[in-house]
Amino acid sequence: MKIMDIISEQEETNYKMVEFKNLLEKIKKDLWFKKDLKLSSGTGYMSYTVSSDGLIFEVNVVYNPDHVNPIIPSDLFKVAGDEVINLICSAKGMSKDELVQYFGGVLNNYSIQIYKTVIFLMEGVFDLKRYMDNNIYNMKIDTPHIMSELFRNENLYQLLPEQLPRFSEDYATTMSKLIKKCKTIYMALGKGTWKGHVYDYGKFNQSNIVVHQKDYNYNKRDKILNPDFEITYGASWPLIDGIKFNTDENPLTAYEMDEFRNWVEAKFKHFGIDFKA
Image 1 (cartoon, helix red, strand yellow):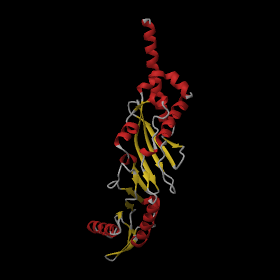
Image 2: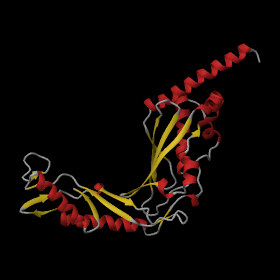
Image 3: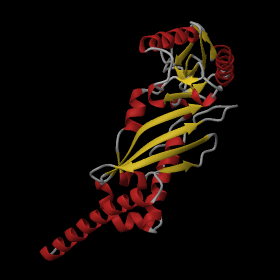
Image 4: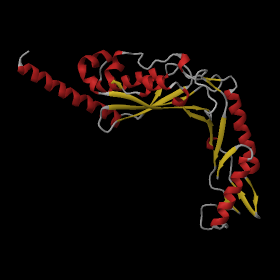
């Protein structure tokens, strides 16, 4: 090959590297940073951005299983990977094959990385990584993959069902009972009297509940998620004698405010609820 041909080829490669980097920036600026995922069960979306150096397409996945028959689909990450391809192809106005042919080896300089996967079931939340084998999650999902791999291999992020945790049969029903219990206790303790002062935390708001999945007894070999929960209720400011707790007119002194907060949190704690007063 002639020297001029080599120089010309290198210049074209450099140009396309800049073009692809600008393409990712275009996706970052012009398109929504959140895309719904078309899944066979439940609902989910991915949020994304591009690294500060423009070389990594960064993805977070959020998934909401079906409440009646909760499962984590084995194609969850594959669908997210497919959406990344769709975003890039749409931004360039090319098909997948056309884009690969046009950019060629330039794709080897860019990566995709899935940073975090959060599972929401009703009011429950947990990080999927904590419930998968480390080697599978780290190698298959967490590790950055060269962008060309994603375009070449449609199953790059495909998992086997046995590699994912499974919800026990009583998982959703147990959580429903726990949420109902929290509401019942809140209705009883959310307003009352303390040392002659009347307090009122207002109407019950189910969205203030967060149910945390405990992993102390989780067996990664069996991969069964049992309903081993901790429940938190994040309360808004209460009224004290009809006056907002966070105002200068609050009838309680600073010491009394701390004393009251500790008292009401202990009341809820007695029933197994972490009340954030």
